[in-house]
Length: 214
Image 1 (tube, rainbow, N blue to C red):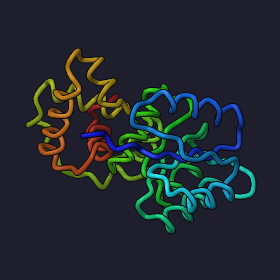
Image 2: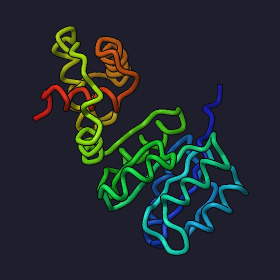
Image 3: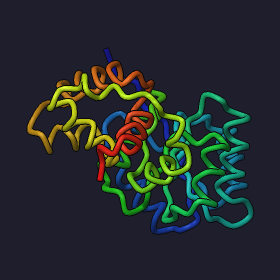
Image 4: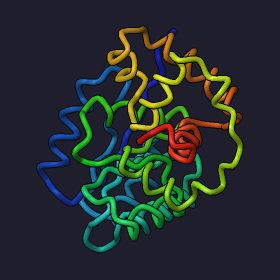
């Protein structure tokens, strides 16, 4: 069976960033750039025209910022997933865009492999957050996690959990622990089940909340 192609729209006001992202994504199997926009207004219109699976969204742009652009695209195209890619991790940036409907939040200092992983994860409906963003969310929402189940987590699963809390992708974790990506996915499934959480973000919050990450 042929792998389904993830259709990506890039929205960023810096020409060199757009060129770099398109060049990166054009080398990735199973990912196709279907549009490029230089500001929020143009991005909304292009999204309505091409119906991308994933939007790679800058935040600080002329005419319409990334928060409002995200809000309009998600409202018009609920199936479209927004991955924020920005240089900023300020509170006034993180919370509004996530509340507007963004699924993931990555920084432009992220490795190319992490950005690609975030796009693929978003296409599958999964969240990826840069470690700095995870820390901010933990500080704001950490008190909502009150249970303590990590005594059931094995040492290897704990190793994986701590890397998840650092914002690492499955590929990064596999390389760090010298195991296969399939094995990482197996551990992640077990971790979520044992901690009683729904996704990687909640697992990361759990790790910070219970002092497992220093």
